Length: 282
Image (cartoon, rainbow, N blue to C red; front, side):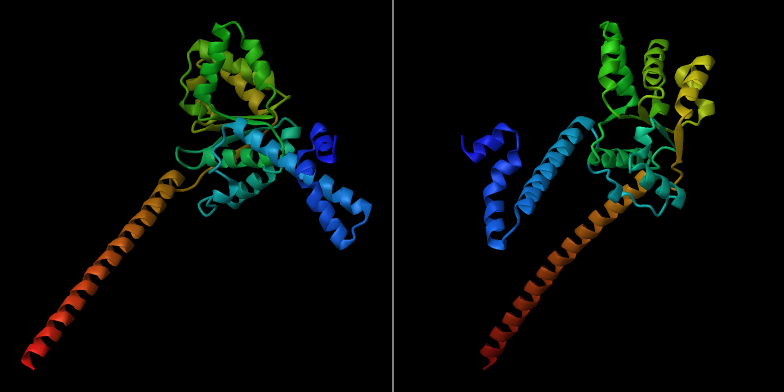
């Protein structure tokens, strides 16, 4: 078994593919044995990190276009920006803290929590994004199939679960019960991120029962950070207007360019006509 095969057998795939190149560079620059080993180890570690992040992104169901670098902070408060940047470090995950993002529809709540989620994935955390409606349907289907505990155990493997748009869910009692079971299962053990267009005083619309509503809120806010996503105008509508403006400008530019080509052809034709006329007069 040669070196490449040995490294592959040890699952050191980056080293197997790159050790020859590293050794050639080391010979050329007279590296010490310690530096050669350091270079090989760093390359292998970084390669494994990238592979892990790619795998976690695939599992997360997060929109990769909703990164923190895509947020236009101008409509938001400086407090919100500081909170998001701090949460993106992931310290809250280790403390099983919940994140609750409130705001009117279209203000950017989903983008804000997705951006935090993407940063967490880059740091190696397991994150799952679900609309609350989809999550409740999956839990209810698991209960009907008598495997609710197995489903909750599977969800427990995620460090953070993002429940998007809880305010749009008008649950039946059965749906409310499985969602409450989900909240209880993660209480003080795993983090949840929730977006809602309804303030707490309106959550009876979701859970129907006052006592269950109070218990759910208590479990969520016991260890929590609240984000007030209060852009003055609809962030979603503003983004759409900006995109439409860019598309209109591009169309106008194309039309102007086409018109210029037509004008140039007309001028060239007129010049040729005058030249022919002048030669005829001679």
